[in-house]
Image 1: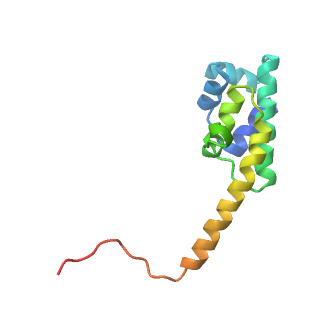
Image 2: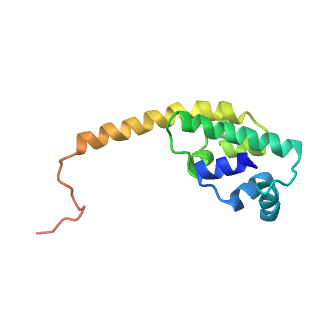
Length: 126
């Protein structure tokens, strides 16, 4: 199925994690990848996860498995929302601006610290 290939290509999420997420065996997930049938509920959940992945692509954010595990509004992660049939795409749209802002802050900090001598954190006692 193209949604699984897309999700895995972008997020690098493992087959094991996806199978746990959907409550199926790794073998079942491999069958889906090969074009096997899946329940309408799982097809919908996969589609939602693929659309959430697209939100991060559009925002030029690396959509790692850690991003999908990150707790957002109400303490729920995108993966939690997939499991519970929550609004996966809306959570992604909520998280994306935060990740962009954090990336910009890291870049500004790196620019401010550029050229400063690096300290090793060790000190000598005299």
